[in-house]
Amino acid sequence: MSEEGLRPASATSHLPSRKALPPFEALRAFDIVARLGGVRKAAQYLCRDHAVISRHLRTIEDRVGCRLIERTPAGAVLTEDGARYHKQVSAAIDSIANATIELMKRNDDHLLYAWCMPGFALQWLVGRLEAFESANPVLDIELRPADTIPDFERHEADVDIRFAPAYGPQLQLPPSVRTAEIARPPTVPVASPGYLSRSPEIEHPRDLLYHQLLHEESYDSWQAWLEAHGLGSDLELSGPRLWHGHLTLDAARRGRGIALTNHFVAAEDLQSGQLVEVGPGLAGFERVPLGAYLFMARSDRWNALPVQRFREWLLKTIASESPGDQNVVA
Image 1 (spheres, helix red, strand yellow):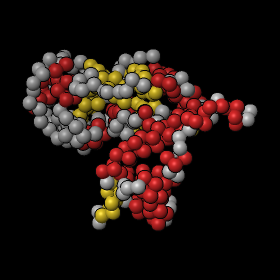
Image 2 (tube, rainbow, N blue to C red):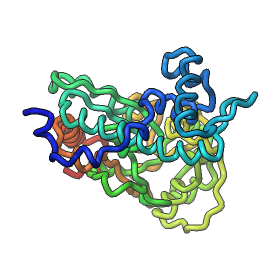
Image 3 (spheres, rainbow, N blue to C red):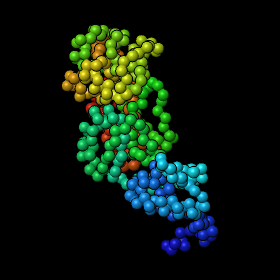
Image 4 (spheres, rainbow, N blue to C red):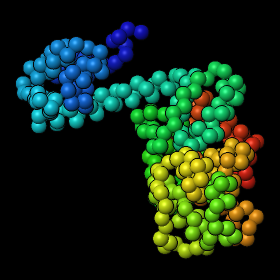
């Protein structure tokens, strides 16, 4: 088909003026300078000489007839016109990048970018990835442990595995993201045998209030666990806050106190005896889930081959292993 056959005969009249479109390389240089705050930083990022970047900036400024960037000892600073222009240019460049990535994803069934909570990734997932790779030799997986949810709108990841607590603020996800619950494991207190041997005896959940409790970024998980065991919702808790679950587990291994965890994260420690569950079989100790692991992906990628196979493999593997007495949602 000829080029004329790709558009109506009158389409030429709707094309933007060539004078209104600076060279794309110049726009890209301007965008990176604005984002990084320096010509030399932009030159390093774009693998260009800084004189080339400066020339691109002058090209745009000459075309629009005003200064867009002021050079200062602290770096490049956008002028008022520059800031207004960059807001629109950066949005357009992001849109082009996202459209390109989306097109690439639609036509690539061989690569999977997976983000995952660090504890689940380290203690459970990474040791089983070889089985997934063996069952899916045509797929390549890139796993990134991350504390935050990826920006699915910008295609930072194809899938994410995240723990959604039943307490505190709920996960806020864009409408374009679809989720599936893959497991709801009970949350259990654990400690080292050494810590328990030199600490007051534990016969009831209320006894834990007289022990060193290890917390992540807040007291919320322990508050929720204690409340689920009938100990009130306004307890004044104390103890070190270590921000990450793998740090609270490490502190528990070192005999620093009692941590909350689940069998996905602590199975090896419990099997080896480095950690033991506190209170199993004692009156008042219930194995209650405080949240669920979610599998997340863009809705329009939900049934893409890599996403679908990884989701099905996760569900099958979790169901077959059934760590602890977790509840599995198929």
